[in-house]
Every structure is written in C-alpha cells, then in structure tokens.
Amino acid sequence: MRSLFPWDKFPFDNDLKDKITKMKPEEINNYVQEIMGKIMPANMKGVMNPQEMFKGFQSSVSPQEPTRSILNSTAFETHDFVYVRIPIKKEEWVKQLRIFHTANQLIVEHIPQHEDKHTIILPAIVKKKGATATFKDHMLEVKIPKNVDMQFSQIDVTEIS
Image 1 (cartoon, rainbow, N blue to C red):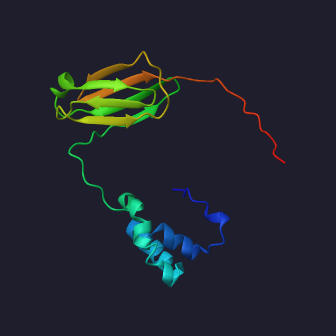
Image 2 (image 1 turned 45 degrees about the vertical axis):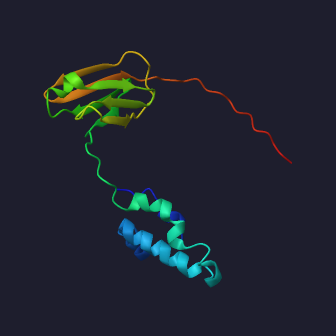
Image 3 (image 1 turned 120 degrees about the vertical axis):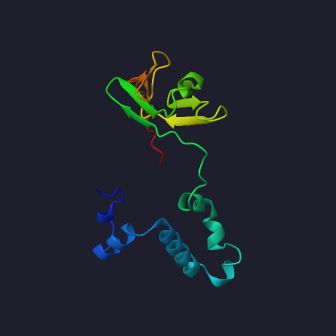
C-alpha cells in the first residue's frame, strides 16, 4: 500500500521513514510531546505545557468510548447512483426504521433501539428525489440518484501590487 505522506519530498533516510511508518499512534504522541518539551524554553514550560497543547488531539489517538450500536454500513457510488448497504440483524427492524437523506448524508433512525440515530456520509452529492430502499436476505440497500452538478463559476484573480 502506498503511503499518503510525501516521504520523497523530505531529506529523510529510509531508516527514519520505516521507523515513523511503523510507529503506533501512542508512540507518535509521546515522541511529539518529548520534542515539544525539549524545544520549549524552561521559563515557558509553566505557560504552555506540551500536554495541554495537545489535549485536543488526544481524542483521535486514544481509544474512543464505544457506542451502544454501530451500523456496519457500506456506501459506494457508480456513474449514476449512490448505494448504501446496511446489514439488518432482525427482520422486525425493517418495520420500525426510518430513513432520510440530505444532499450528502443518509440518516437511519430507530434501529436497533427506538432512540438510536445513525448518520452515514455519502461518497457523492445526491438528488433530492428518486431514492429507493429494498430489503432482501437481511440486507437493506438504499439507492439514491447522483446529482451531477456541472455548473462552473469562474473566479477572477486580482493582482495586488
């Protein structure tokens, strides 16, 4: 699998590249905090603690609290449609669920519990009308026509001197 990080654009040797790509998120977090602690002047450590500075990023690194129920949905697009497939464990769920969609989200309510609400991000912008949902072999499939918006607006560039 190809890395999304442009390693070839930086003067790193292969050992450093391999070491960083194999690091766990916790190790990266500890490494960054250690470096920040070293570069902060001693008189500023009380003002800006590296732990406090990265507190907002901790949630993406540490394991998140598990939610009560997660839909194992799959969303994909073809040339004309966006499809969302949701495995349904119990057939009675089909009678109680409610499905809505916006231009870029599918909202599924009332499964497995009545108060549950799930939002699925769609891979493309979809039309307001024309969606269908079918249920077969414990699989709910929602099919929504894509909205192909080919309207382009030109932006003029003003030169500032």
